[in-house]
Length: 133
Ligand SMILES: [Ca+2]
Ligand SMILES: [Ca+2]
Image (cartoon, rainbow, N blue to C red; front, top):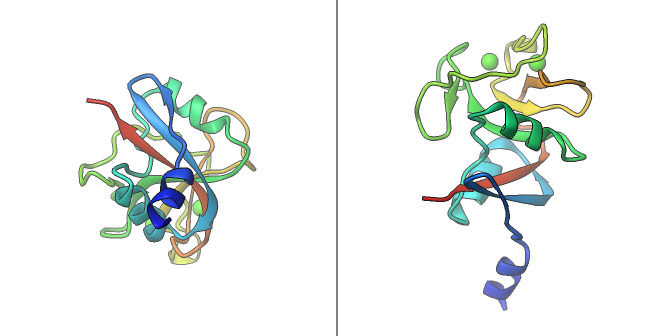
């Protein structure tokens, strides 16, 4: 039953060479990351404008696989490499309160540049991605 429930809760949809699954429960950043990894995926790493637009089309704010928790201001991807593509909103990342170390796509911001940094402890909906080999 456990296995059946797990399978039922993950619906993958294909976009480009990647499958995405929208998770309809809110989790903090590290629990979200762990959830995606337990299903053979990862938090989204945005590598093109098309992907940024696609992931911005969901009705909720979502976590991205980008964090500067290790070293303030140095944004790393969940695959361990340094992030090189960003869609920060103007004025972000602002590390508000000196404690914003995880990146989200924020539904409060319009347009292509809609990323915000926020505390990793906040619970958000999220999307897992699985890159097809
Ligand atoms: Ca930060
Ligand atoms: Ca911020």
